[in-house]
Structure formats: structure tokens, C-alpha cells
Image (tube, rainbow, N blue to C red):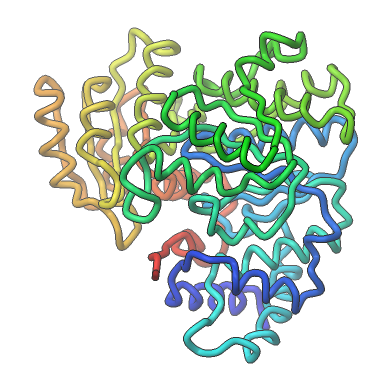
Length: 427
């Protein structure tokens, strides 16, 4: 099997959808020798900030001398971004080997319970991290928490970044319902750390933690209690990243007895953290400044707006916006459109893309003074804003990944692997 064939095989698994439940993942893991039993995890769930918090935790523990696995999703350009050890992407050869191993197990599953893409990739990651002898794995949930494939592990700590409205069609229409799903990663007696401050969601987290006798720490409290919580200069823009950093530090403090980390490792880890596509400012050879941010839901759009007001208060950039249809694209447009002097709406490379014409109409209403145009592709949109000195590309991580390929900010595989991010839930 070649790497391209392995990716094509994974692509084919998308047709089995994304099923909620742990049965298949537990069975795949058991057939693989239960690699999760040989690893230590920090399990991270939440609506926004999961990836950034995971990146900070990884960077700090690596600065402390540990060999750290990192499992995140979605990927921006290459599938291999999902599985990393000490920020080195899994090799193509290892992807091929692990796909081959997973294929051998499929006859053990009835046709109506075929493993899904995310279930397979989750167990691939477990096998890889075990083989790599990781000291610690930073383990991000895919969707929700309680019934997410990643929830087969018993971590050293459960981390919940925040609770907001996203994926309501699968996680519930209220914050209480969504919080219940996210808090499903809480395990009996295992410390819980959260940055959530809203009373409704926090009450759910606190209740479940109490029921499971899991000690709960709120990141804001830990930051006040510890000098280590004084966030150093972060390379990631946005006030919300300071809260993510406080959450990472609070998690490290909660685990100090099991995983001691010195204050200098915390400082170095935060000062050197790298997490592309989130308020990432780049300059093109022509001198054009481009800000890439995967603000894919309303809370993300609000964080982008605040960051623009804080860091670029005098700017009226060109805005390239593409959003998925199943998001609250109207409110996302209403939040970010007033920031721009020139707006170009585009389709996202996804079956779930919102029509650029619909985005254009909402943006025109939200910012009547701006020139607003719908373009058929991101390539056309970039040409459209070629004379603008400052451009913001946002609305979907899928769009940010496409931009990174077009702008040559990330090595692109021979064939596009961004379509592997596509999924539908089958209940």
C-alpha cells in the first residue's frame, strides 16, 4: 500500500459517517492490545480553544523534558497533523503501516457496525503513541465528549475549556445539554479543570464532578493563586488565548505531584507555543499582511472581533469570509462584517458550505458602507483583494487550511487531504 492509497482508504471510511458511542472504538482498541492502558493522558473537551489549550500543554510539557504525543482535529492541510510526537508529524510510512493493521481487524465487525473514520484514526493514534513510548499524550475530543471515540481513556486530568453553542443538532439545543455532553469526559476521582465561567454550564460541570468525586479547579482561581499563572508574552494573538494559557497552567498545577513542571518550563512553553491558523499573522512576498483565523462559530467570531479591536483598532481590512451551512452563519457575518471596509464571501471546500451569495446578503445588511462581493472560489477572492494591504481570512478552519495551501504556508501533500475533515453524524 502507498501513502496515497492509505489516505484514499481513510477517505472511504467517511461514508460510514460519525457515530456516537464507544463500542467500536473499545473493540478496535482491544483488538490492538488496548494501547491506551500503556499511556498517560490529559483529555481536553470544550466548544472553543481546545486546540490552542492542547498546543500550550504540549509545548509546556515538552519544555519540561517529556516526550509528548498530540492528538487534535481537524487538520488544516495534511492528515498527518492530527497525530504528532514532540510536534513531529507522524510519518507517511507509519500512516500506511497503521492503516494496514486496522484493515486486518475489519472482518471482526458486522457490516452495520463498520468502524468510522474517527474511530479508526483514534485507535491508530493510540497505537502510534504507544510505539513511540510517549510519556504523556495531550488528547483532544472530536465532537462532544461523553460518546466521543476519544472517551475510552482514563486520563490524569479532564480539561473543559468552555461551553458555547455549536453542533446543537447533535449535542443539544441548550447550554445545559451541551455541557452535559462535554462533561461526559469527567471520570471518577480524576481532577477536572475548566475555564468555563457561565453559571448555567458551570453548574453542570460542578454537579457531574461532585457526583464522580472529581476535584474541580476553575482556571481563574488557579491564576490568582499562583505566580506561575502570570501569563508571559504569548506568540498567539487575542485575549482569549490568555485564558487558554491560564487553563493550561491550572492543569499543570493540578498535576504537579504526578508530573512536576518547573516555572521556567511553563514560561518557555508558553512563549514558544505554535498553533497555526488561529489569529496567525503572515506577510506575503508582496508585503500584504494576512490574518488567518478559524472563527468557525459565533463565540469564535466574537473572539476575532475583540482581537481586531485590541490589536488593529485603526484597521479596516479586506475580509474574506467562508462559513459552513450548519453554523449560525448569519450571526457570524453580523459579528465580523462591521470590522471590514471590503468584504468578499466565498464557498468553503465542503459539502456543508453556506452559499457565498447568502453570506454576501447578510454582510451587506450588517455593513452597508462596505463593498461586498461574492466570489466562486478562494483563489478568485485572493485576486480580488490583491491591492488591499491587510486581509483577514476567516469563517472556517477548512477555509484557513485552503488558504495555507494557496499561500504556500504549509507543505501540501500531492493530493488534497482536507476533504478527510468532512463527516456526517449517523445516529
